[in-house]
Length: 297
Image 1: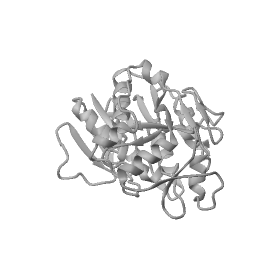
Image 2: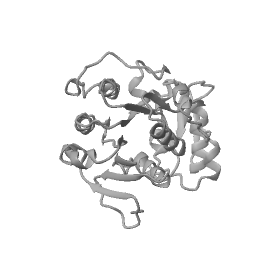
Image 3: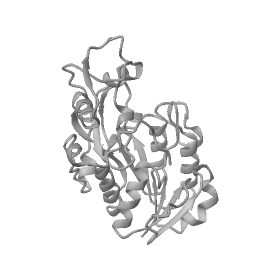
Image 4: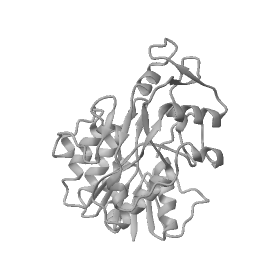
């Protein structure tokens, strides 16, 4: 099987690429980065191109058996819709199965709640009508893709951590003085998932000919546990604060007041068995990257 993989040098894509190659698949790796000299070239074709110009590579894409879309474009305000919409438009001109990387939080109607694997908002029927300025634009894209005649699997990511390229520190709430913070006694949760378990779900979706929405997340991880464990591992301090503390950064308050639980029963039904619990991996994982920068693909 030959896989057309977008974002193949990004955080998610590089690990998914390695997983597919280890499983014996051929991979056409689309990325803006030049092929690294130490890349494994067996069964790997490196395609250096911009996601926005994907329509120029339709013939390459059509020679593959499946599309796996992990590329994400960012600005200072978060994920950007433009390149993703251009790519999905190109995908729609093929008959290939598509595995699309979604986002749990674009399916959250408020600041907190439980997200079902069938959660889709009312939205447009065409990609050209997706509201790129909406925080729910990915959910709208999912809705359009699932209407295509192609077989489409949506993998919605929770907070992904672990492995080379992780940017866990980007999501940790801070005070203005720079300390990691959490609310004392809070029972709020985040849907955490280790990158190895994310890769396992992509592989299960591929081999099961999956169709529909699947959540890459494990419920039940307290925000306070995430912050304290990650701070210990990074050699930083973590402080308990109260809501309304003037030393909290605005973005920290927003994160601490958000509690999200995501069902993953459909993912488990196709054979996914997440094996790494937070924070167990921290004590034995030397490749966790705590640098405060986001990598692009």
